[in-house]
Length: 161
Length: 204
Image (tube, rainbow over all chains, first blue to last red; front, side, top):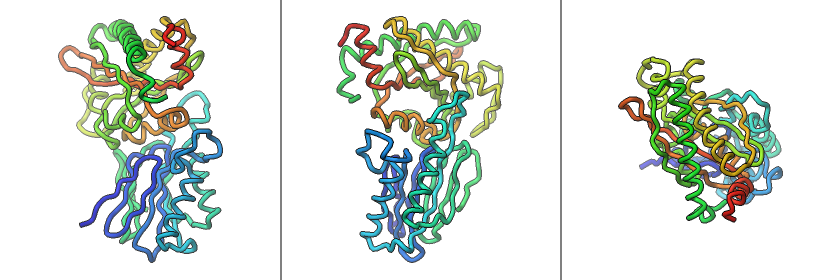
């Protein structure tokens, strides 16, 4: 029996085949899947903010790109995944509301994506594919058999990346 | 702010502000809409942020959300949220239009209509806070987004994630002749703003 593992906002989970892993309704948040070609397990992280260093209230490490990726990578390594073989697929970072006034919060999606890319680069984990930015929400799910990430959006055709 | 912080007297005050705000909103709306729309007294409650998408039927439910930031003595944001079908009913009744079944892209006019209703409701609520407390509040232009509830709500969640974990939800029901339209306002302010509101009313 295979199950669908749901990852909530500011959380990460590890999933082993034949289960699939999903996170629902990414807006300006970013979803990051880390997997290898050989292993039959992967991790999915759903971050909200670019950096734990910019905010006082940073107890939940999965909220941030820097601490979230650090924790997920080390959990995957503990399960036997080799850092050098790790690959990533990412989605999200949209700009949901078009405000007329300029504010920091309007660019949070872009800043999340930039930060995720920088952190992954520090870990030497290549990004195989991505579906980021624009102005719509995304639900993503990862299939360990095909290593494909399915991106579902309201009123649009499903995408496989 | 913890759930425990908003109980008893404080919650009653916020509810009363909600009632007064709703009263003001009803008056403004009936003028705008030539009495086509009425509004019932709202139900005010505190919700954990994770529960808010559930209020509209789950994180993947398509909603229309109008969001306005407010600043001044108190600061935060207000959202006016409707499920897609309810949004179609409301915009339809304002513009004398019928929409197709299922997911649709609203055009500029539809969005303007929904934004305007949201703007009136949100401003009425804020101005009743301002009148009661003598605190200055001014709003920024609203923006609208129609998409999955989870993805629409993650921006407020990101802002709120820096200050707290729950929101004040004001459930409101409109009556369009005989058809009810079920929507709600969500008021999100930082702890300091709540303190100012209660202090100016002599509660703390």
